[in-house]
Image 1 (tube, rainbow, N blue to C red):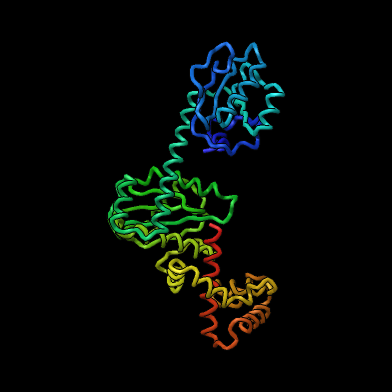
Image 2: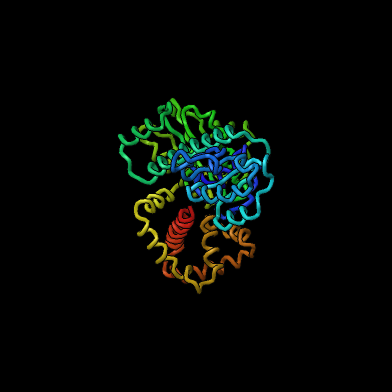
Length: 386
């Protein structure tokens, strides 16, 4: 958590940053209250009055009759490693200009309360947020391990125990992503489904979300139930791409379910489809496993086959046409519509592509090679921006 996150809490949403705008990245590990600690009339009872990385809340009562105490207080807070000072404007509506200037120079955020927010409630909300973030980080770490490591069955059981939830016999996974940054709020609203997930969980992974459900029956209609929940909570899904896994035994197949859902959502995004089921993929499964197991070999193949199209001096229209040609499964008319040009233009470009990359191949071999190379290229492009 940092100062910027602190300002996004419901109770602090009306706070104003009056100085130190370039210090909002500072970490926040605690929230403390300042009363009279910086009054020269009060002897310090300890060397460290406030713990480092704290947001310090104050009504500035100690400087009621002595505004000159404020600059010294800010200097002391900076020396003690505080992350920010948030003051309630009951004694001072505006701080002296010298205080604001010094804080701005030192990149030390000074925040002004928006109203009559209670110190204790601010502390409770901040700690609750930090606890939630800690658990989210824990979940993301667990999922990253399941996704990216070859875990044993015993390790899966151990992970399930750490998650401390009543998981059922079979696991089902969906991976959700959106390419439209204006609709990330729709993705965040997915977390409102958590109360319904008594034997599952929702977790972020890179730039996507996982919804994991477990059930006693392998015939559980996961997609139907998820659709009903999304409709019940009026969560818009028109900008979200869904990838679905097969069902697996939870204690042995959880990593497989996660990977299938993740790659299915990527393939759905590549093919510009609203959803994709992993078990409906064909040769893409082989390409996914090849890429996972030996990315270097896969990309060497891509770069060697598509080199004439990827060269800086190459006509960019050719690579775009090759990608669309494979996405549209060789349908010239659909490619022409997607590329906003005449079908004959597409035929001309495809002839040129074939001349550049595989002049001696027959139609079937040319399409097979081009499809493999383009799909690996698109898969790599998606994964490298995650």
